[in-house]
Length: 181
Image (cartoon, rainbow, N blue to C red; front, side, top):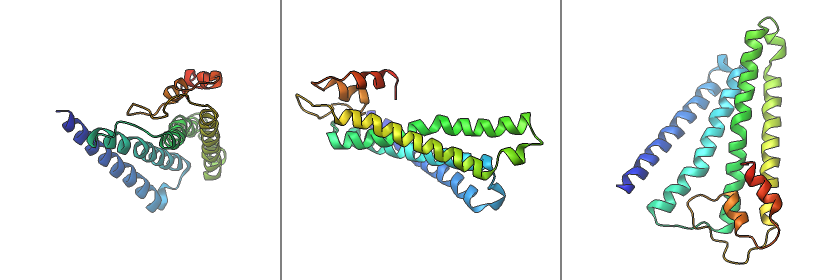
């Protein structure tokens, strides 16, 4: 019965990829949708596509092909990308909220306050922030030394699992783990 769950997960992943790709294609191809709101919607679909692509194939690989471990380098790579995409979702929703707030509260000033340039700048800032924060979190893990194996016996490589394996001082990593970065 467990294998059917992963077939269902694969089906949901394919639907997610198709749906997000369709949203991005429609926004890109229709020139009427080149507004600040749809710039943020495009980014949200892009981030969702990347996040599910970073997570679901590895989960399927682990359970369907019995690869019940994650190597250290793979874990670091996964953590960087997964953290980056997770950190991008909420700010993208904030950008969408900002767009709607200005449209509702200041409808006459909307065209001057929310432009494509403002939205691109906001989203670019969010991407830079997410990448830097992810680099900091992953670099804190790379400074740790490990007494035992660095193979994670889990289907999900998590910051908390990595710093618990360390032998040296891991207080900064503990703080990041508590903050759920």
